Image (cartoon, one colour):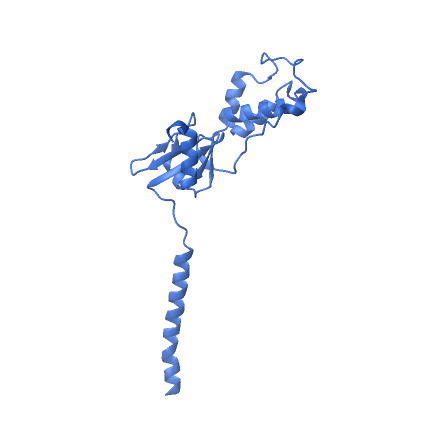
Length: 197
């Protein structure tokens, strides 16, 4: 009788362990990005915009960037960075930070007066640049422009940083997907409509 009782108790223990394992699996399942609601996008320069995600939303537009398909937004978690690449698609990538122009105070002993300012210093022709943009990422385009500038090496440190930042803003398209928290919403509306708040 004692042996029979022990055998009968085994299935109950197994069932309990299975249930516990199932509960743990359910708890670890990641929460999907909401297909409806709101999301905040921040561009490379720090500008932000709030978007309402509805059942009919197909793409999001911010500044002069290419339209961002809603599928690209829904495929990444909050905090992720999307970049427009040479294939014409928005995909997740490591964030690229703008080069800081720093302060010009330390450049008082240097200047660029001896450098040509007519655009002749760039070795790449408009046609070559167009071809480069069709084959390479924005970051690679910026590197190529820098490498093919005859005067870049002679510029002051401040001017170099300013040059790179200008090219980044022109050739890089990048957004960060942010959760629409109270802080992010306040910051967004302050930047967009400071006079209405």
